[in-house]
Amino acid sequence: MALEDTGATLCWGKAKIVDHRGDVLEVFPKGIDHFMGLTKEQMLGELLFENPIASCTVVCRKSALLSIGGFKQPPGLPYVDEPTWLQLCLIGGFLPLNEILGCYRRHERQVTSSMKASMIKASRYSIDFFRSQPEEIKASVAGSFEGLYTKLDRKEKEYYYYAGRANMLEGEYGEANENFLRALFMGHPVLKAKAVIGIISNLCRVDMAWLDALAKRLK
Image 1 (cartoon, helix red, strand yellow):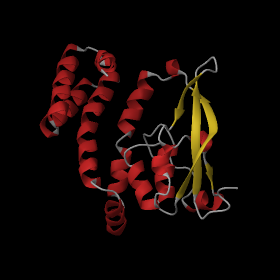
Image 2 (spheres, helix red, strand yellow):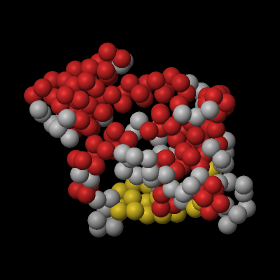
Image 3 (cartoon, helix red, strand yellow):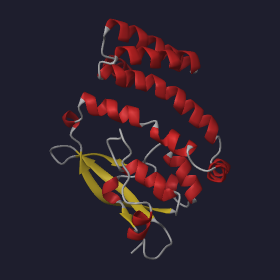
């Protein structure tokens, strides 16, 4: 009904994330109020850096989905949601609802190293998507989202570090070293330090999961 009463292309809401016992782990996203009332340009800017939309909560206009050729899954991407939302955001607004509209079960052990690597590599897609748009669209989004190009530049630099980690997971140690070096020479001081750790871990063939565990303890 909400979608019928507005001109929105898509509506979405919050989702409960549960474990294998059905216990609620969290509600996603936590700050849905942030997305209320955004223009399509502002929402597109948000989607370039995060995907707050749980697929199980989405209701989309069929006409809008057909107009972009259906769900999008570019080569190398292990999912269809983010590229589809980005494309839909070009043609109409999104309507967030501050209600729990869906639920999905999290299976940590089902996420293989290969899948993690694919998802890391796919994180660059939004950067390339934005850069492929006509100049007038880029200017419109940049004018509606403060600091857009600065954030995109930072995301790209950080991508090289995470791409290096993805390479390590897949045993691509030469490519890992190249990406860590890019992060080292291009990044901010914290990223440079992480890149150095990545280079050392790569040379020693040491899984970098320990760094994630350490970061969680320090929070």
